[in-house]
Amino acid sequence: MLCKGFEIELYTGTPQGEVVGLADQIVHHLPGFVWEPDRRNVEYTTPPRQRYERLLCDLVQPRQHLRQYLHRLGNYTLIPGSTLALGDSTVFLRSDPGNPYHSYIQEHYGTRVVTASVHINIGMDDPETLIRACRLVRVEAPLYLALSASSPWLDGRLTGWHSTRWHQFPHTPPHVPLFLNHRHFIQWTETQLQAGTMQNVRHLWTSVRPNGNRRPYDLNRLELRICDLVSDPVHLLAITALLEARLYQLLRNPNLDPLWNQPYPRLRAEELRVQSDINAQKAAQHSLDSVLTHWQTGQSVRARDWLGELLEQVTPLAKQYGFSCFLSPLRTILAEGNEAQRWLAQMARGESLATVLQNAIQAMQARETDLVTEICPPQAA
Image (cartoon, rainbow, N blue to C red):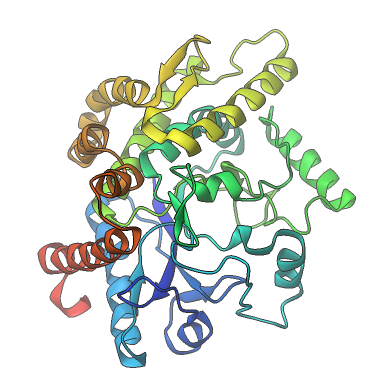
């Protein structure tokens, strides 16, 4: 099995849903956490693992440690969702005022970057195989956004988008191609750095990117960056299992490479780039109910139906590798909706935004507590 790991961004605040910036204190006193440019959210990273059971502990244990520290600071908790639901997006609260890269981000993007998300990393050592995998995931990335959307609000109001985060986030550089090969990725990155459209090799904010210890030269993993924060770790593992199974399909079937045997690969790559970016914005607005253009057939298909077809395709392969059970929660998401859709349904029944958010805060904490009790070693909980 492939190694997998996560970068998780979280908001801190009160049980009433007010976001409170505590990252500067957390980072100095709690190992394993790093700050983002704005101190209202904080990030932790899980180590690469092959087994999903271990990944589950890696996801929930740091949150338990963080919750214990927040309790010592006061009546603080973790807040689900990927945008400042009850916050003030007109104000940027710097976590590290002396960081010049953070200064650049604040000046050029403002609070559009003050979001919480999850980045899914899957290890792939061969750079050419990795580039092919990035092409497939790029054209299907809107599906993962549709499953994970959890930001229908901002500053105390509904926005009309299921993923306000992805709608407003500054995708940088504005046009990132489907890379033809590893050399293309190297040359393109060097050009962006020379032109200043990227400040450094980390300044590539797109739905999926090749990653590694010395990018763009030494690469060892695919990083899917499009997903909103998924507060239920079991649901996050289900999304990851779909991604991993899809990569196994690609390894077995080269025809799944969107540029496989294309007579004009650069032209086809540009067509797919435009199409996938349009699909991503459609998924950001309507998530599972969005109507997307299928990259293989060119036909219109509802995201929910496309995902259902993929789930049926990958399940036999996931059974061979022994992780098909982790796909099961996807059926629940497809039937009941993602977090944004469930929250919007509650508001349609008459509940206020604040009440829905407060209930979600309680549900997130209860879910983590149950998981720690059920699956994590007592001495590490």
